[in-house]
Amino acid sequence: MIFGIDLTVLLPFIAVGFAAQMVDGALGMAFGVISNTLLLSLGVPPAAASAGVHTVETFTTAVSGISHALHKNVNWKLFLRLMIPGVIGGALGAYVLSNIHAATAKPYILTYLTAIGLYLLWRSRHYPPKERAPKIVEPLGLVGGFLDAAGGGGWGPVVTSNLLVQGASPRTTIGTVNTAEFFLTATISATFITQLGWEAFTLATVGLLIGGVIAAPFGALLAKRVEPKMLMLLVGLVLTATSLYNLYLALR
Image (cartoon, rainbow, N blue to C red; front, top):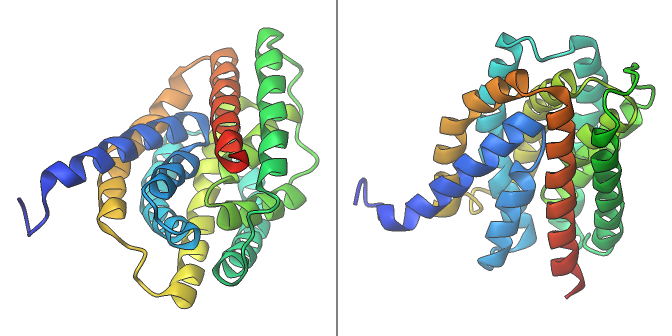
């Protein structure tokens, strides 16, 4: 026991935070989805779970974003086009989830993400496609930010996958989406705190924070080293598996 905290209780959350952030840093998605699913399965209310996860992500995305920038994984023009509407959408989504039950649309969103995941799996078998600059960016940032806050996770799955479908480079897409996510999570966390207070910051979120911060620098290195075809395949696999699992939970 350290500082009155039982390490046997904390260690599983540290392990989940580490694993979730390794996946997120390397593939541009999944920390929120994995962590939020864990907290909900332990009986944490949706708004409190989303608030806790986003508070943790404020720290992990800061470390991850710096690491991606150092490894030259960030397209700064695309970053600005995503970040500003993403912050606006995130603030709106956090306010909605704090005041209104927003679970009705979840099965539809997850079905859409499953279809995108399967398409990315198909695309990975026909790589390399012709790379092109994505055209639909600002609306994507707005919707991704809103869904991330209202659904407890979704910025990476929605934004990363759609940019890849539009033909963006996997490495810079992952790095840019991860870096923009810091500003999104900071805004969402601040909005939740004004609506819910600090009650959502539990022992579970402390564990997720420790594990996530330890793993954050390594994900950017993986995104830089792994070949684009494999990145596309892994993004498709993670997106399809997490979307199908959460769809099953939503329809039970």
